[in-house]
Each structure stands twice: as structure tokens, then as C-alpha cells.
Image (cartoon, rainbow, N blue to C red; front, top):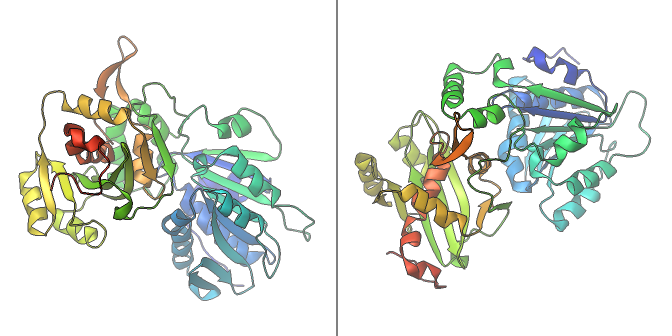
Amino acid sequence: MRKITINSNPIFKPVHQCEKRYVVMKGSAGSGKSVDTAQMYILRLMKDCGRNLVCVRKSDITNRDSTFAELESAINRMGVAAAWKVTQSPLSFTCINGNKIIFRGVNDNKQREKLKSITFAQGKLTDVWIEEATELVQQDLEIIDDRLRGELPDGLFYQIKMTFNPVSSSHWIKKTFFDYRDDNVLTHHSTYLDNRFCDSAYKERMRRRAAVDPEGYKIYGLGEWGETGGLIFSNFKIEEFDVTPERFDAMAIGQDFGYNHANAILTLGYKDGEIYICSEIYLYEKDTDEIIKEAAGKVSKNHIMWCDSAEPDRIKMWRKAGYRAKPVVKNPNSVQAQIDWLKGRTIHIHCSCKNTIREIQQWRWRLDEKSNTYTDEPVNEFDDAMAALRYGVEAWRKDRRARVVSRKEFYI
């Protein structure tokens, strides 16, 4: 086999050399840990016959835009596409040496049972990559761990690799792998500052976050374990659910305009007094025409789109494109009122909405550094999906009919 040159960050060298059973990689957003993991798996499976990889996310469908996309990108970047067969349905990669990569979820018992029954035509399941590992519960890991057993040929070893942003210091991953010393475990830490391929615009966004949201920056900028104090929402569930319009009592769309910060569009459902975040569009540095093109076929023109009233020209562009865009009327204390209303009901977030999940897990009240107490003012940075959520529910919040179960859409 010809020599393959890969671009890697020195920070990951201990991971490349590790043969321990558990490699637990926490880090900031943009640290390059997922990119590095993908290309090293491609290299490993091309090099060692008899290895097979399963990529795991909490929800199976989120693999397509994460682990699958990263691995496909790595294959193309490394110039080894001729050595791999790519299958779209079901998602898989097959190397010319017979090694295979498949994708699974652990969102329910049915998916967990499918994980238990994995077999390969050649070799055994030797490697597991758990992306966004904080999504999983400890029982999920135990089911996965049980699958890696039996004698292996010389030179092969079992390994589970977990990559994630360390959202909460109370998470079971911290207690299991970081607070307890185990010779079978390599823990690793990386940040965007370790990533020599990180672009200047991203670094600037992180510097802005450090200034306005130091607690959020600790997690997503420095890769440190987050604290639960000061979080605005705890009443949310991350899950997979049916997003067809017919199942909801009402639907609406919320949009927060942005360019240097994200432009966020959320499609929302309302059912039996609870909120469902069905899908998201979350884009940086795109003008309105580009975002409208991105929304085509993804965002319905049948539902009212509630937008930031500070951007009337953008609202006109959306209306011209056929969307039912309207401005949200901002009254005094409306942000607090929206938050209070949302806190009073369960918020269901579809597991494909990764940016919304990231925001809601770290959106906090602003900390008064002098008194070391939290104020009633939310941190107003990196809250674009949260703003879209607030706008999208505004009509339901203001109308008592939103409490009534009806198949008719409110606010025609």
C-alpha cells in the first residue's frame, strides 16, 4: 500500500499511539477532534485487515450529517476514494480489503437491539466511535461495550473512542472516566487554540464569546466542564419524534436574522400545551438571498414565520419569496415574558437540531461579577436559536386559544 499523507494537529499524537480500550476526547468546539478521529479511522481500517468500525450517535439519523460526512470528507481529503465503496442506504463504507464502517443509533430499545446483533462478513467489531457522547446515557455505553469481546488476531485490539463538548460537570462521563483513574482509559483534552487549521473568523467569534459569555466560553472555547448554575432552561427533552404537520395542533416558524452571528430558523410544533422544535437552519456569513435558497424545500410556506422586527427589509425579502414572514412586536420585558412562558411547558427538541441543542444546554442568566449572583438578564450572545424559539412561540404565548386542542392552525 502506498504511503498516505494526512494533515493532523500535534495535540492528537497521544490518541494516535493509544491502544487502550477507552479513548475519551473532550474538547471545545472547533478543536478538530472529530476531523482527526475520522481520518485516523480511515487510515486504521485501510492498514489493518480484520477491523470493523461502528459509528454511534444517540439518534441514528444524525450520523448522516456528522460521522458519515466527516469520514467521507476524510476519504476525499486523503485521496483514497478509490479504496472505498460508499453506500447511501443504509449508510456504510467498505474498504477494498474487506473492512467495513456502519452507523447506528441508541435512541430506543429497537435501535439498541439492532446494535446487539451486529455481525460482519469479515473480521469482528473492533472499533466504536461515539460522537457527541454526552447525548448517551451510561446504559447505552454498557450495551456497546458488551459487543467488543472475544479473542482477536495478533496486532488487533478493541477500542471505543468518545468525542464531545463537556457540557455539564455532573455528567456520568466525567464521573466514570475523568474522576476515576483507570489504566484502560486515555482521557484527552483539546481546544480550538490547538487547531492549526482553525480559520480567523471562527477565532474572532470565540474571542467575542469570551468577552460576553465567559461561562459558555469555558465549555465551547476552552473545553472545560460546564456548571449547571444559571442555566435558563432545564425543561427540555432531546429525542426523535414524528415531525409531520398533521400531528400538531399548530405550527409556526421563528427566525433570528444574522450574518457574523448565526441566522437561525426553527420550525416549531405545538401540541397539548407543549413545544416541539422540529428542524433548524443555522448559517453563518450568508446573505438573505442565500438563506432563502437554503430554505427552499426545508421551510414550509404554509406557516407564519415570526421574525425579528428590527430587520423590516429582510422580512420584505422573505415575503417576496412567498413566505408568510411577519415581525414580532417587542414590548417592554417581552424577553422575560417569553422565557417565563417557555419555562412553563416541556420543550421537545428533535435530535437533528444540533445547534439548538448546543445553545439550550448553555444559555444562561448573566452573572454579576461583583456580587457573584445571576441577574434576570440572559446572556445575549450565541443565543440565535433561542431568539428564533422565542419569536416562533410569541403568537401562541399571547393568545389563550393556544391552550385549546384544535387541528386548525392559529393566527391565519
